[in-house]
Length: 473
Picture 1: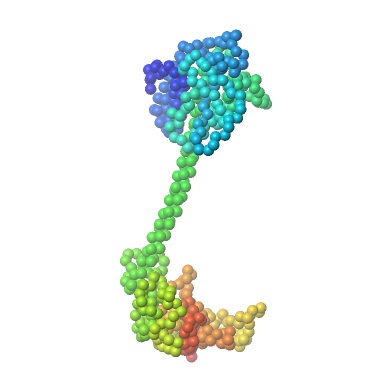
Picture 2: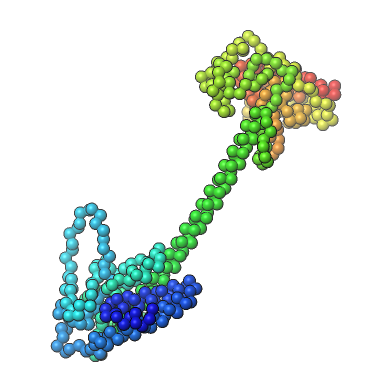
């Protein structure tokens, strides 16, 4: 941008706006590290300021004095078109019609609009809501388009020569806010705001530079606030992206586990690297177990064992309508085939098991029939439970169990519960000879199942044989 670019400028308002834009452009270029653009803006700024001073000299604004016969009050001067009219730099913001009923305007004393002889002097007055350059507009969250948003009414004509200064009363009479007046002419230390205060920094063309400087400061503050908002939004987006990525990883891991379980249930080995968690396959039914029950023999997937119809959802054992109904092959008087199955092979003898049994037999006589103080629970011997868990080697001792014996807890412990073949609350012994280790499923059948009486008889025999084999007796 050269000097010839400003030679054709005859409107002081437009030239003032150009100066403000060039100042802001120079500052933004320096912040972005573009030295060449900053130098160009600085060079063009000097040319524009020279052209503005030339316009002031041509129109006599730099050496014109006020006539003695001029109106005395600022309002009278504005009414007759006094050439040193003061105006608020920003017009009031336009309010969009929101469809509501407009309130009646309050009666206020307004200053008549000036009637300048020079058509280039486009001056506006502030409304009640206008606070001046500082508070009239919030420039946050805007980009470089703010360079062209400087209001067209930013130019203010002030007197020179004999009347070089003005007071706060002159500005108040023309609608200026106290906030803006204080910003332009700050009182000295210890002084309060006075309407007769003389404002030294807003005489003539110096005020144009002051106005552009204030606008540039607010624009830079808005630009920095915009950068902070962008950074905050970027941090929030990054945080949300990390959460989304973690959710996708967990979801993929979950489906990988389900696929591995499905492959294990189908009898095929999973392809590729398996999941980190232990995949729990269905326990294979021993070859010597027979019967037509759904718990033994060939496992028919998706077939209800009660009505022998398919369509079972994944994880369901029977249809909801079949709950509480007896299986076709199981009646009240018959014994399920899985109860008649041969017991699992007994484990070998164990020295630890024999030691625990000896401790149990020493404590049994003293604990038999006793109750815990303050309750009806019988006194238990903890060594008896540890002996049963030592004997079962982490497997359910029910010979017809078709659960999931390979699954373990987070501490790598077996999912087993020790139960008595004869209820200890009804006089049964708290001894490994009549105790068995059961998975939660078999434990529920033994406690609440319809065939619990037949199962208790089988478990009593299993516990006896397992105790004899493990104790070496």
